[in-house]
Picture: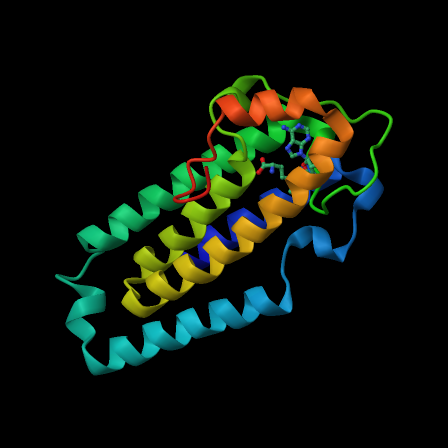
Amino acid sequence: MFIAVLAFFHCSEFLLACIFMRDELSIRSWLISKAYVTAMAFALLEYLLEACAVPSIKIGDGGMGTISWLGLSLVLLGEGIRKLGMITARSNFTHNIRTKRHPTHVLVTRGIYRFIRHPGYLGWFMWCLGTQMLLGNPICVIGFAVVAWRFFSSRIATEETYLRQFFGDAYDTYAARTPTWIPFIP
Ligand SMILES: C[S@@+](CC[C@H](N)C(=O)[O-])C[C@H]1O[C@@H](n2cnc3c(N)ncnc32)[C@H](O)[C@@H]1O
């Protein structure tokens, strides 16, 4: 299930990049970085060590336990939110943060962006916590939450500096009325 979740995430990211991000399409469009591979290697290590030491906490009564089902639900919800954001923003959504305004770049405030300011990041945040709940990894749930929160907090601050340069007051007004829903990032 974990491998299927990862495969779906990366293949769908690349597919959407082929459709909406042709200008920046590269091997990086699979979203597999060294930091990411290291994090997932830690996750597998935790899973294997705990599965060897206390098999019952991973296997439960022979099927997936409640935490794993909750994790899978979080994964699916996170995927849905992120992909809806990408499909709504179309070519305005780029994997790399734009530092210069592209002539076709418009501020997206409709659809899911009416309710969530950064659906791509909220969805990915939920997805990565969900993967660790799916594996039943208590240490990585906390580790991923801390690392992902710090990553998105700094990325949102950088991205919004440029969005304010591109769209001025329109972005301020939009940001003031639309929360991120990521804890402690207003
Ligand atoms: C990886 S995408 C993430 C988009 C958004 N932060 C999200 O989480 O859904 C980053 C690119 O999206 C653009 N972007 C972010 N919010 C936008 C918005 N509301 N309208 C148009 N472009 C946006 C940024 O300029 C940046 O180049």
